[in-house]
Length: 314
Ligand SMILES: C[S@@+](CC[C@H](N)C(=O)[O-])C[C@H]1O[C@@H](n2cnc3c(N)ncnc32)[C@H](O)[C@@H]1O
Image (spheres, helix red, strand yellow):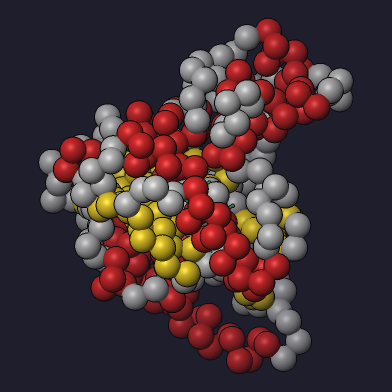
């Protein structure tokens, strides 16, 4: 087994000075006049859509403390706290630039901020939260890139890597490393284990998924691969990876969490009108709006969410 560890930590800590290059679904739905809002059944921001969806699953009247990890511009938390001002929030982010943006966005609300890599954050300090949110950022966490090693790095890292994979395989009955061409989302795996072991009652996670499939009714208009193994995505200044959600789901279930999983389209229902159909059918879009719609609709089905509910909760 030969692996190279892909980390985005340096990029997020030192180089990132805009999220414009990486337009998340949350950010693309934020402007009131966004073309993305117009292709949905209701014209809300991302946080409002998500809150309305989660409130059918999570008893928000019982949620006193909420943690968001990697909250980007802070839009999602702004919406959650506006809809439910009784919650006390904490934002943890590795990026000083984005943490400052969150401080600006959330300045009038009850929020604490901490600059930290979630993987370095103590598990015990997570246990007081009722709800944890990680939106569109699991793929930023470290990934073992198969078939590559940096010169001289292999021996040093190899023992630790093998030990880590053996630990996860044994504890959660996984087969990490069995296919030596498969990249492994070790950061996402570690963070799910950490949040579950901390005993957080409700956890929401989302990211581009390597297991997402295009639904039958969309197939005439759009296609993408569902390889089942993490895919590399090259972005400005860093690379990230799609997530193998079945592993995260299995770990959470073995740690006694109930799970619910689906695509963003479950809570961002598409208004599948002629404008959308035309934009999707074109081999080459005629204008920027059609290009934006195509990317947005792709994201609605390529992104998966995973909701974890602690087992002893009815
Ligand atoms: C693609 S952005 C997503 C932002 C936001 N959640 C959204 O949906 O628009 C990734 C976010 O995760 C943060 N992040 C990346 N790696 C992290 C880590 N190891 N620990 C904490 N935050 C991290 C980034 O700084 C950024 O805020």
